Image (tube, rainbow, N blue to C red):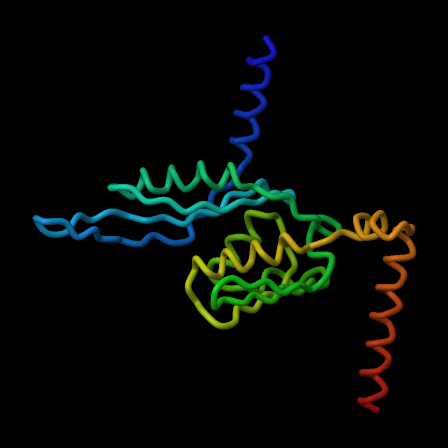
Length: 191
């Protein structure tokens, strides 16, 4: 009975997940008689509410590679705290190999300003307003891994407050004061 309910819940969760194919490569294995061709797929999976994962797999045919990568992505999902369910809590830098990714929170109405693999990650994650810049490489594998490195470093004000034994209002009010002082500095420079 309990197993049936668990299986139903898993099926419901899987149906809610959105899959994004980021890249497909044709790969070759050199053997005695020549080359054996296969395909490698990079997939991003998310629920649109703050959970996202990525997977990479190879197979002889494209659909098999996509299926295997999707299964791997579902197993490697992480939860990312979002501000108001639409943007990041703070700016963050992630890197992997030669790839660096800079993610910035954005005001409402900005949209997703990001290219290629980063856009797929944000759409699967459910972020509506973000500005992202990929530096160092345009290799989709390194960009995805760098973005996930940045997202793993994302912290919510609640987590920071509990770690520092403070109230969430103290943490958030400090952020608002910092933004207001930056705004007043830029306005005074313009005059």
